[in-house]
Length: 306
Length: 306
View 1 (cartoon, rainbow over the protein chains, first blue to last red):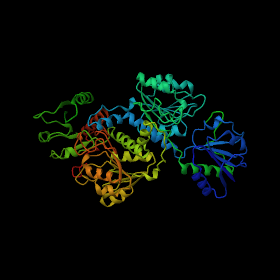
View 2 (cartoon, one colour):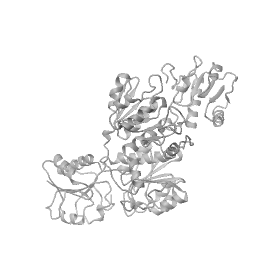
View 3 (cartoon, rainbow over the protein chains, first blue to last red):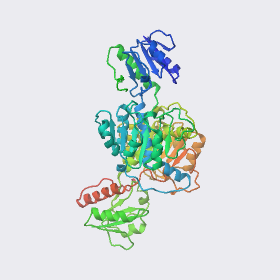
View 4 (cartoon, rainbow over the protein chains, first blue to last red):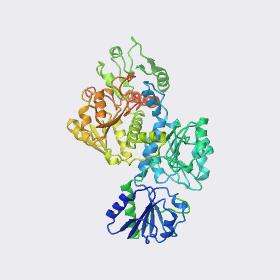
């Protein structure tokens, strides 16, 4: 069995080594133009040439949850694209989002600033029922985030393309359910896949439909958010602030208006990192399943884009 | 039925009004020296004179979880002291502690500082198994905190005076179990009641028994912590930092070494506030149960001090 590794921005060394250890019978190498046909590929933002030269793959493993980068290419027909389904990312996403929600809800920044300047002052405790959280996207990550927010007793609303049920979450779906979902939400968490339908979905209109004093958390893709609309809504006072992990241009330009904005908290696309060992176990497990002729979960449906 | 209200630092107005609304047959008033004997009392840091003048109470409700302030007084014999068991405090404590643990574990402050100065840099993701969390005290609050940490898949250890079992938590008990518990923990969360046995329990010796790169979260009482020992252990590098909500002197003096310390995060005893409506419902429910002759939960055992 031949496995090839073609990943931009990921150091190949540890992956090659660990794939060889996990699958001692496989030939594992870093892809080079002109290489012979491989059976399986691990890819992240590969070039079109890779796709053109590897039409006979049994499967291609995308080294992350979002496959929007891959689907911009012309893919070889009939090669299943398999995305990382969790690999430790869901719990990281739950951590990141809960941290941001709790920090805002509990006004922890205000308390810390007070303490740093020598004060000792209380604020009237906020009431949890005044801070319903809306989660857009109820895939593996969205479900896990919604579950974690419900664990802290926040009212949780969820919105997805097609109808879904989840315990402890009030769900809405489709274009016709969006306005009601937004009206029920004060904190908005975006975990949608990026598709033509969801691009720019965080815009002036959606923000205006959120409850007053809204808070926006974007942990999906930068292209979901119309950045100037967020800045305008914060200036107008309808949106109280935002926590952003993803941006239209990454790395975020050093002089971008989001940097040092007093109401916007930033991280560098670090909300859920692909964890080496979890990811490796998932990929080698799926290769073994394919070799046994079993069906896989996590295969991307090209038409939907996720 | 006569109910008296004797609480330092709590505005009586809303309590009196809401008690009257909830128990329309009761006479409710703010305690004054020389008042006639009441049936029930709501107290927070009352004077000794109150205790001396109200020996015939059927029960005394302490308006918080910690009764250490009350037990320093000479209490009338045979009057049950009932503490607030939850009243929305457990979920607040879970929020506060999880926020602090996630912030430290995920290095979110480092990322935010990087982003504010125009950078876009990644750190090697920390591994969850390297950050076992030890929760001292497994009462209502400690159990809820341990459960929330387990929800985020941290290895959780719990230590209590007498043996306890909790799903997802490795438990230890008594003086003989303390060293093993500390050695299994890297992040230490203190939720113990303050008693003669637990005073100063967070000291140079306990810190030195924690795993290297330890992190300390004190949300119980300031007198649990030997403050200089914490500063010394941070200087020595064995303890990486701390999140502190309680202090030996409250309000924390404006010139205290903890203020503006780069590795210590502070809040003003705000980790779990007594929420008016939850607390009121609990007290009125318990008065009704007592009037029906039923047994109560939350009655403090004076000899143990909690």
